Image 1 (tube, rainbow, N blue to C red):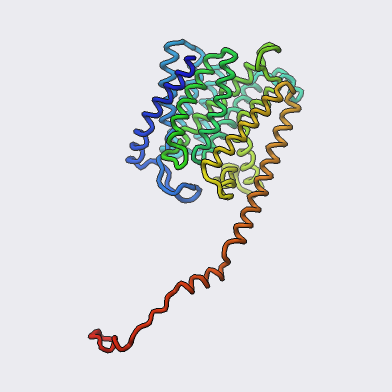
Image 2 (cartoon, helix red, strand yellow):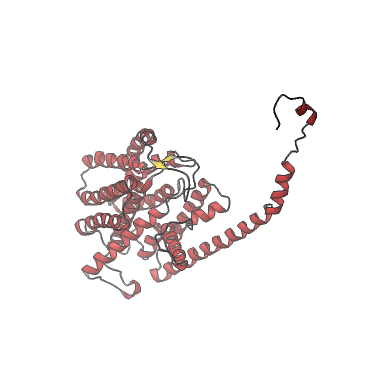
Length: 385
């Protein structure tokens, strides 16, 4: 029960802190200005991640003092480090290499000191126990990919927060059922903090989370997912809610960020661009072109994310060799249909809009002919020479 109180504590703190943060950031003129890839229409303060991170951290401190959970310190240390990487990038943009180095330091805190890593594939792809070096390298790649994949979807009011709430709720509930109190507590305090942020980030957003928020949430989700994978595999066979398809449910928990990242990277490479080149090829950009609003896109993509998790949950007794291909085919098909529908919509929209020559005729008709009486000018004292 105290997990709900922890979430409520974080929500209350975030709800009180965020309005103050908005005023401070507005006064300091720290935020996003419309133009370029920005799809909002007015100045919006950024770095909203400060609000929900402070809320989650204070709530975590309060409740860990009541119920000591020593295995949290290294995890929270990594989250704190990632928070400062995002904060630094929001204040003064970091070079990609330095940003990656900072992220790597946060990852090493979790992988090496907290020993949260993928140690075995349990027969998936014919691989069982991983050598320790391979385990460190593979887990590092997974954590970086999940963190940056989540960072990339933060381009729409309420979208990143909605996806995070869905995933954290699933993870927090599972950890709670399995009696893993430390990870359950981290999940619930971030749920409370992010919910308080969503109150101000829902369309039309009064504040954005920035890299301060998206990197922090992405890394927290990535860490909890890797922890879930190893805990799930260590459970006895008959344990309630044990998944045979560990990799599949892990992918389902972050399926939209992973798909969007793979999609935009592939499109950019095929166009001869670098994978990190910014553009408007994300899924949410395509849906916006169809005339959908921010809140509609967030709810649709959040619902699809939830349905994928439910599907993976339903197929939990099957192996990854069956479930992963099903998820992959379904997601690729939905992405393909989205592209097709968007193209058809845009073609119809172009056909309905007046052509260039029609616009010229319309403008010409609007021009009023002004009649000037020459008699009145001749009587005027103004010199016309």
